[in-house]
Amino acid sequence: MTASKSYSDRIYLTCVYVFLTFVFAITFYPFWNILVLSLNSADDSVRGGIYLWPRAINFDSYKQILQDAEILNGLKVTVLRTLIGTPLALAVISLLAFALSKRDLVYGRTITLFFIFTMYFGGGLIPYYMILKNVHLIDSFMVYIFPNLMNVFFVIIVRTFMQELPLEVEESAKMDGANDVQIYWRIILPICVPVLVTIGLFSAINHWNSWFDSYVFTYKPNLKTLQAVLVKILNQYQTESFTSSANQMADSAKRNAVSSDTIRMAATMVATLPIIMVYPFLQRYFVKGMTLGAVKS
Amino acid sequence: MEAYLDKQQPPAIGGKAKARKWRKMKQQKYLYLMILPALICTIIFSYGPMFGLYMSFINYSPGGGSFFHQFFHSKFVGLEWFDYFFTNGDFYRVMRNTLAQSLLSLLIGFPAPIILAIMINEVGRGMFKRIVQTVSYLPHFVSWVIAANIIVTVLSSGGVINEILQSLHFIDKPITFLQNGHMFWWIIAFSNTWKDMGFNAIIYLAAIAGINPELYEAARVDGANRWRQMWNVTLPSLKPTIVILSILAVGNVLNAGFDQQYLLQNTTVLEYSDVIDTYTYRYGLQNGMFSYGAAVGLFKSVVAFVLVVLVNAWSKKVNQQSLY
Picture 1 (tube, rainbow over the protein chains, first blue to last red):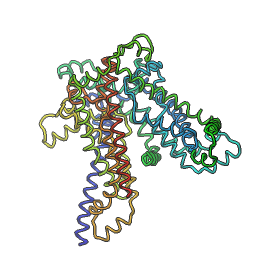
Picture 2 (cartoon, each protein chain N blue to C red; picture 1 turned 90 degrees about the horizontal axis):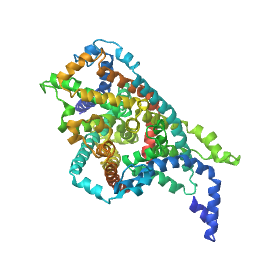
Picture 3 (cartoon, each protein chain N blue to C red; picture 1 turned 90 degrees about the vertical axis):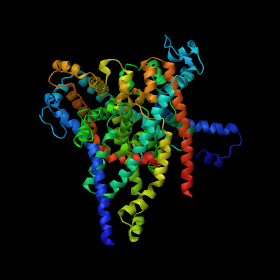
Picture 4 (tube, chains in turn orange, purple; picture 1 turned 180 degrees about the vertical axis):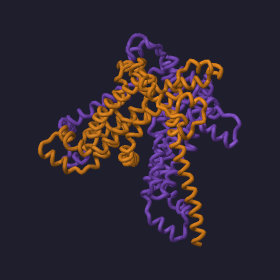
């Protein structure tokens, strides 16, 4: 009996390992494929067949990117919006979360519902666009900042964290005559650093990844974020792959040594890299934050 | 808390209670100030558009005045835009695409994280487990722009999928995946699954971590092999989570997405790729039919809201039942 049991267990475990290896392959390999293509010489890439290793390794596409004014400007705008938008959002979110964490706040429930309602119902894209236009945010850098200051989901996570803190410290500070602002700034914020780091990372990633606001709500080329530039490159690639092969032949003569496709790979890598760099921090904080938010909401 | 205070000092007259409430609010003035920034943002960017939805009942023209000012200078048309949406033939196509892509994504994307979580749990606490789990949620954190760039590359005629299919002799010529309308729904479903499977597995892993180890002990004593343990202990323990998440997923069925469709589609597959959100964007902003776009958006918002409310009530009921 034990023999057959261990035999069936072995088959089961083999299936498990095969499945997990498959998952690993499909999630890791596409990124690897892009990396390899971005490191391969463009002339050589046209021949195809590059899947596991670069055949003719060089960094031309990255050099090209670092000279491309559009991509460099996009990178600058993206970094700026992330660095400015994230701390401001943290301030707005933590202030609201602190106020709503007070169970004796008069009309606290009504105010909470007022915010929660926006999670379930919205005006949709067109009226939103009209409002942005009306408050002069269309074609302005601030369209990246102001609409992203609030996030009800993040508020709930921070508020829950604050409500689970022991009350004693706050009570003794109150005895000493501290007002709510002092309690928020000196006592609550320092304790809330872990949850604020989690929310800050999420907010920063949202800023880094968002493309639609730049793509639709701005027109000036110098306001386009890296992701919006990348959308443009992607669109060009997709239209190119439609044009007949004859057209492409004529085109390729005009093309310079680094094909647009290799540039696309390199730009994709540049946009992915920061995500991979904050990954260790994400790992440490977000699992806890996510399960916390999920359980409570 | 308010009720507690009221009990402590029963208010003789309503005015006194009101005065006390007012005094308390004055004490809490800083708290109200702290709410203010978020309140202003929410009123402008969330409630503003809701009031702006009035534009779907008029023939809105941008004109010279401000947004709300124009409301009084545009012709009221009642439900004509909705009528137009339901009768011009687009409604059927757009709803079909939205529901098909949502449901296919659920069909593949809902079981995938459950299976992944169970399998990750089976391999103990080694390096292998950590690597697989860490890499599996990488796609979740990159933008759809990056994901679309990757998907387009992998599915291209010289891409790795075609290469594998050709070397296995399943096909002779490369398939042009993204120019084939019939494949678009499946591409979206698989892309969604690929992107979120690892991330969604986290919640199931948390649920698995909460299972009482004695249950496995008992199963082992009864002679259950690992497959049996998974089938008879792990899976039943996940049932409440699965039920609740599947109910909530139904409430989200109209949110088939925007990014993935918009970034992966092209004119040849529009017949199958167009979902409510891309349709709204194309007509409302690109073609300048503002009121029509707003009307389609309103239709979606209302139906989605009703769905979510129903589904929440349903999940509460299920939750209570599972308690007894």
